[in-house]
Length: 603
Image (cartoon, rainbow, N blue to C red; front, top):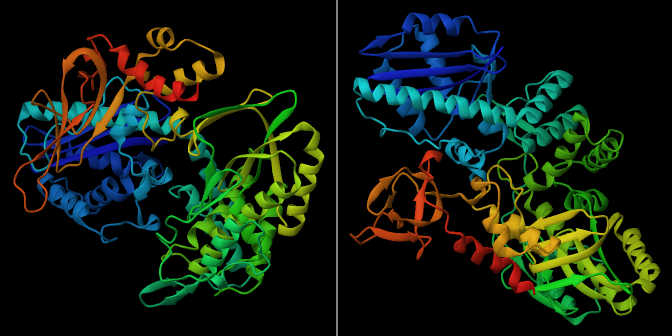
């Protein structure tokens, strides 16, 4: 059986709420001066050793506390609160309970979705906003508060609400959970709390170790990843020697790169730009970028738009050019290539296919991870530098050989061009020549039209009607991304691709939740609406009446005055963490103006 759960800890109160995943069963336990469910709570925990508990950050917080309670056999709110504070303040693994030592197996949705990664950090409150919950509730009382009886009733409601929202998110995550369950069964290894990247990396390590390649050194203190550390990297050592250019601008950048020696990989490329074919190609560690701006590009009877790219470009480049961490033998490259071929044997909707894709992608990213067994920053530079230069090599060959070609975009793993239909065969010959030299395979998509604000913000429609969205025009966003005011990109799509009128479409938009926005401040700051305090994560919408929303940030060093920062300056807003508070009419003018910013620039 699976139980979703969450705990709350205060100096004089401990609560724990449960909700069954597959049954309409809810349980609540409280230990306080006014109620003592200790006996029942301990008995319940001891009866669940064959169950699984699901939570949000439960591996990092909730379960270490439950583990202590089960070991002590006592539920003491004061001791539990001290333990909770120690867990929160700890910056190491002191309180972590290894999976093999847990009394009850755990599934941590925060870890499954990789929300413990700094770039993806997402709270349950933020997810409540994304899931369009009726209530977005923050902790009702500051940590450390000694609660009275009435406050405990508020805490009980909050605790149960968190469990309900965690269960809702669990149901949204079922495909990911089932994938991990299937992998765990097939490989007899616990993948349940692995994020996607960790699944791929661990599987690759399994294959290396099966081939007799040692990935870790072991001693009495545990294991240490085998790595190649480089105090200095000469970029000339990373660049393929056969890459040469005729275009003066590409050649200038190539010569400059070859002359550089670096001591770290972050921030290597700044203002490295080559203007070729009428656009600026901007080089960066993540990839090359270039695009026309503020234009609509359409195919015609005489011209077509073609987008070409390499699937999994960076891993494919590493495999094709046999790039590897220096501390591994050449068989590393063979295993890498074999995984790519093995993936082709499985349909795309299978666990095996997904696992192998993750394994292929994980190695490149971890080549620059100082905690990984794949760490060798030279490999990172080999992949990123040559990946960009090989795209430039393709662009140069296209410009030299394809008459009347227009370069529309270059973006990390591919190029988009507009060409006369009569030169399609020549175009294909150039691409095939590039493929034979690089040992990479391009995929082609033909676009009907593109609405391009810049390289990171555009809509593209294929000839068969499929639509691709980037940046400000994208409304199908990841859980960790901002879902504020989705009505804006959704209406922009209708306007640009379907010819809908802006004003009428906004005013008649059926889903009022799409008008909602979110603001968040750290614990050191606070929010107010007309000087009335709000919770740290607040849902709101721009309204015809309402108040002025402000962030209050701590004083800068050497200053005493708090910084007051307006949110949606010049507009009135209505907070509605409880959707019942959304009683003031929406100010459609704000949303209309935002849609116009996305659409009118392209007309």
